[in-house]
Amino acid sequence: MQLQSALTLFSGLLENLVFSGISLGWPSLQYVLQQEGYFSYLCDETNNNHTIIRNNTKRGCSESYLLDRFGTWIERSFGTFLLTLGCLLLAVSTPATSWLLYPAMISIAISGYTLLISNTQIANLVDVKARGFVITLLAGMFDSGAVVFSVMKLAYEAGYSLKAILHIYIWCTFCTWFRTFALMPKQHIPFPLPKAKLRYGWEEWICFKKSYDKSETDPILDTPTINDDSAATNITQIDTAFSDCLKNLLLWTNAFHICIISFRVNFYFGTFLTLIEISEDPSNISNLTNIFGIMLFCGFIVAPLNGLLVDGVIKHSKARNVPDKISLLRASFASMLTTSSLAITLSVFIVVANSILSFVFQLLTRSFVYGGTTTFLAMHFPQKHFGKLFGLTYFIVGTVTLLQYALFKLATAVDPTFYFINVGLLVVVCLTLVHPLMLFFLQQNK
Image (cartoon, rainbow, N blue to C red; front, side):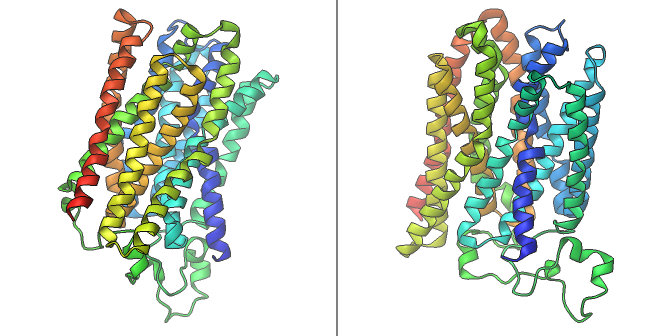
């Protein structure tokens, strides 16, 4: 791997950790804001309202369209601007202007998914056999971004002011501006990589381009040469139309799969403080919040396990001369079945009010579902449509998540302990087995 490619990969992992997924750490920030007196008049409703804001931002497809239509620099500039703006609004907000938290968290969450989408293409820089691992590792670092607000909470409890912490973080966001134009392509990183040297990032600046041999072709704009290994990790080729992707039933069963599991995880996320206040000693709530934050940080450790599972199944199938299409279906079946099983187990522990095991399986489920979905879309659909399909999937996820607020309001009226709601969600989560079963029958019929 060339130096620039290595810098792009490692800086992308760090960016996903420090900037992309910070909105996932809302419980830790909420605890600090409550200590500062934010939304005291809303009491428990705050817990769910801001989770709705964070999840509702997944509905936007604009950043995905920007990536496919205008390229990486334009899409990332949009996301990075929103990141800096959101952090600035968060820093200038006060208990008296707590309404600023709404546009702040919306901007931060949208920017996070924008950066995540652009960073997914980094996996194209590595060996094809490790592509699934890298995609899930990137998604895992995104999940672990929740640790940022956990660190802010610890700094706040150590005596530092929230304003000072946020102002330092705002200055750090300018690193994403530098990375956008120095270590990311103006358009896209092709898959598979062209045989010629790939020039992107700072090498696309005008001052560097002038030094190139005028007869040299820009590899980013070249049509890549498909080889056997790359065909084994992307069964759809460049000429597949977007309308054909929409007609693929697997796209919609995958959307159903992630919608239900994401709703389960996010509803637990939104009712986290309420649940531990009901089932745990009040003096232990702060410690449990810290443990939860640490668990969220471990996403980058857990998520690659899904990638290793996918890559392992593909390698095992190829060793036995199984056709590429069936290999991918088998790998996706193993990934999705594991994810559904984890989600069902999580739902069981939530029903029995086991906080620590709920933390563990929340981590496992969330890491597997988001990394698995990203890998699924990257493997089964053309790269040129990845942004649109990713955006469409999360648009559906966000739309379904809107039901969370209505469910929360219903629960507070008729089921304040959330017991029967969680039992119902356990039943619904079992329906996600439809997606892996469809993958199983498809590969059996090939």
